[in-house]
Structures are given as structure tokens and as C-alpha cells.
Length: 219
Image 1 (spheres, rainbow, N blue to C red):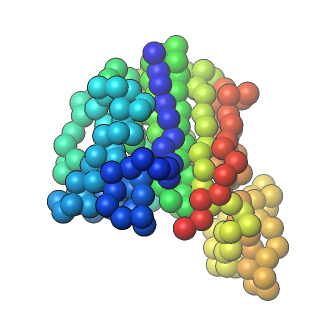
Image 2 (cartoon, helix red, strand yellow; image 1 turned 45 degrees about the vertical axis):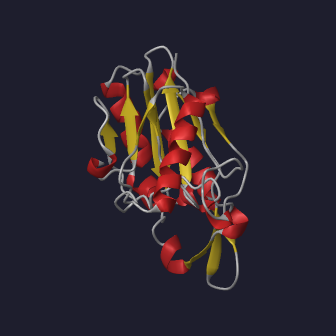
């Protein structure tokens, strides 16, 4: 059976201070911490993985806001994580983990094929094609995109995401206008959730199986 879960801020963590409550990040770009807070992060991650799949092995990547997706045939050590922003697997017993703050987590599953995927989709990765790359990698493992269910998890809401004219210029296509609302002079409010959902729908994954969690994580 395929099981997936988005882990967010919550109580019951092993973190040592209130600001780090339920902290899951090793600072996704950096090497795993070795101090007491690092030990707490490792314990939080262990608890999260156990909540998703008891006895499962958590696998993560070194996130760099890229469109790169890693295929997980064998789990790797945390110190040897590939530079990528998504990962997929068909191997039972693995828990795929990505870390987000303002960016959107995207979880994907083809239950029939037993293939799952997880992507870290900030504006740059989504614009660069990380969602399509993840779906394509799942197909390499036997998934069929029309059978894939996808969910976009909590991320920064449009009302909190002010962007400049220069940012808007990255999205010149007419169809992208729907993701920008007028803001302060020379600025817009960008709807990252809707943009990522649109990217997911554009891949052709199972239409009615695309949904999103309507919460704002602005940090």
C-alpha cells in the first residue's frame, strides 16, 4: 500500500527551544547538524517517519530550488544527499521527505503502480519544471500520469506574497496573469498555490485527483 503525509508545525516535538518546535529541517542546503539541536531535529524526523510508516526509512535530498528529481532505488546516508528538489521511488519501506517553509510541498502517488513522489516547489523550481520532472520520473518507475493523485500542501498565501515588477517579468505568458493580483504601486500579490496546482494539472495527472490544503505558511 502507498501511504503519504505532509508534516507541518505541531506540538510534541523533541526540539530544545520554542522557536524550533517540531523542527524538521537540517537547513536543507547544509550538512546535518551534530549539536544538541541537530539531535533533536533527527529525533523529530524519526518521529515523523514513524507516523507515516512505522519502521520506514526516511530519505531526503539537499534542496537547491532546482527542477531536478532524484529516483530512489536505494536509500542514501544524510551526508550523501543528492542536490535535487524532488524524489520518487517504487521501493516499499521508504518514506520520502522534503522540507518547505514558504514554498509548496507536492505529494504524488500512483497506488496501482506502487510509485510515490514528493517535490519542493518554490516559484523558481515550479517555474523551472520540478513538477513535470517528478511526474516524468514516476513514469520511469511504471506509474501512469492519468492514475497519479496529487496534493499541494500548505505554503505562503497570495495575500502574504508580495512580488516586484521584475519578478512578474519571469511570467510573461498571458495565461499566467491569473496568478497575480494588483498590490502596492509597482508590486503584485503572487498566488503560488494556484500556480503550482496549475503546473500539476498541466502535467495531465488524474484530473479529479488534484487537490490542495488551504493554509498559509508565511515565515
